[in-house]
Length: 123
Image 1 (cartoon, rainbow, N blue to C red):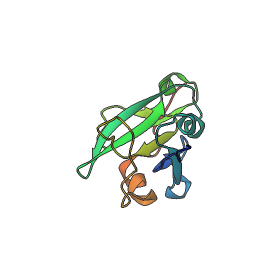
Image 2 (cartoon, rainbow, N blue to C red):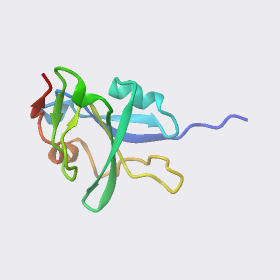
Image 3 (cartoon, one colour):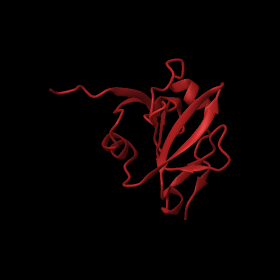
């Protein structure tokens, strides 16, 4: 008996993105990490949690992003330090630790307004 994998909705913010039109919607397998690795273009990642308009958001980010020469970082609303590299943004997690969809009202423009343009560069 095969079970169909649940796909969740998120947004990808490329590391050098400075305009809203470079942010794109992505779909990723809920219980898998292959899609996350592929979209972030990394082997290791961390998850930053922030609150946007009363909703918890999960931001997947390169675990070693601040160590890579030429990588750029940006400020993210609700997070205390800059995040470096590509950002993959989803919703909260359920009681089992599974990542959930980014709320439907959070579109590309909404995400763009919650993050800064790249402001920091690793030399």
